[in-house]
Image 1 (cartoon, rainbow, N blue to C red):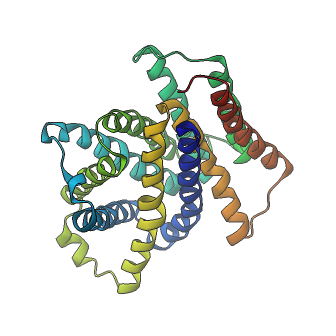
Image 2 (tube, rainbow, N blue to C red):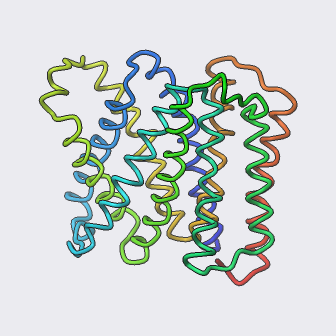
Length: 297
């Protein structure tokens, strides 16, 4: 199997887990109402589990050049922690549709950065794929109902910050993956994010909240399905693809999120939403077919 095709497959798997976990997160946020503790626990638990695995089974992958830790800080704090917190805050303050629509302008930001800063070539196929994907998301999540006057302006600001954070995460993680294996890059990104959250919300404050064993079990499950599995897949896929192609493929997340809501929450799915989902999937298929007729990424 071509490396680029493997890259697409792993990013699709990541998007699937991000999508289904969005439904779980939505339910938990309605219960706790605290994006901070959810962002912090899922990152920290994931970092601990991944460190334990590497320490006992692949200890050689724990080695890094500590001069590079500043790049892990950028990826972990401004990328991972930022995108998680701002996205959850956006969901809390405005509608999920508004939050997703604004956040998934991130592929456009990555494409612009890659073209104007990194001087990468933006092919017509890739440009068309970005446009088709964005239109697809717009239709699939009911973006035509987007109404800034009726939604929280603060929520929209959070969603914009989430978009910039996700773009930052993708670009900075790609740079790390040029030097380190995906699992190593992921571990130290998670550790950087975890250290940041400790300065914001100390272990003593968490202990004082007196969370139950059921709460911790729930946070652990969320950590596995929304961080550990999908980010492992995304890091691996990103290593095999360009930043723009990887983040564009991740736009399948809202489609999977809608699908999980249909299955678990019983929401209805209109014909227009179906057309939007088809367009998002079509944009990924176009990219994949282009790869088969080109000389790689």
